[in-house]
Length: 460
Image 1 (cartoon, rainbow, N blue to C red):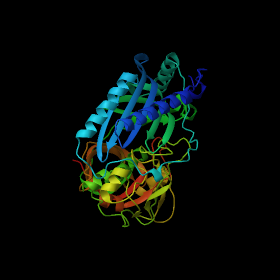
Image 2: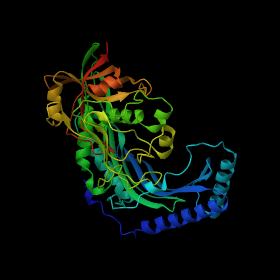
Image 3: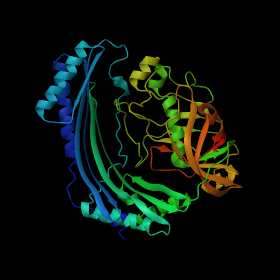
Image 4: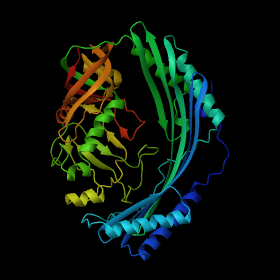
């Protein structure tokens, strides 16, 4: 069975630096032409991405996809009138048409007092290497072999009756953001992933589950054997699932679901929701929104971080910053546009958050691994899957289909399915009992499992 780290890299020359320079030169030229056409300000985002995606099922190749995409987006401002246009074609005629369209749109739009580039003084000036560029030049035959090895590892477990397939993906991307302040920012990064979905069956029915790994550098992957074993273990553990009677109980969100809870927090403190007055956390900066022991910090410059960046989508420098400090909401998450709408300043979050770290801890000051979090749960619900879209950022109401495991005295007792969990996000955030040290590093939202004191579980 091939090990991921043993898949040979080709000796293809790395032309990423030259390609980024070409994008930067093109961006600078288009900005000059936009100014000549009468634009008072202009900005360009240009990108090139490429990748390989192989899917295998039951030992056979299902799909092989090679991609190479280009993107070019231009925004011009005529005073406070804005026009945007984009193209996936970088040839001169397409670029000129994009420029003409953006200028035409801007001339006929209404003025918007919040429109315009981010403040020039906020542009990034330091660009340290964040270790994000690790091309994985795996060829198609190697990817197929690796996918089959992952699937074989999972299917070898007794009780696994079928497979939904394994996937091997290698991807890399280059991007340039430039604007008429004279700012030119270059970024390059790689993202690679492996996944496997399996099916198990018994007299009570069929169950499906999966596992995946996502990394910047292929050498950081878990082994093919370990990934197959993990997917099989998760699938088999779901056999014999039953429902629960309706009750209120503590709920433990595993790390990959816990980051979804943090995502709801981000949605509620994002500028777009706030200036539209569509958030249950309006006017909450400086007020407690979580327990007093809990800290959440943005860390944009983590080496190999999934969300690492030196600047945001407007060129504003990223910096380490608290989002929740000792349970108190320290700030919102703002672009320059949403900041102006709110009479505030950009937080460097145009385009999203950059590596949010939820510190492990609890009211008693102790940090717990996953087994320790099960012990803290005692008797209650371990949540491993949620379904549906029943979350309102406006009211904070939360109601979703769910499955997982019933836990008694800190030990998993049996799998459960066909239940609904419900509460209000404000109560859920205030009711966090502990955050585990079992951090899921496959995302830019870095959190361990999260234990809530109480939710309503509706079942039979």
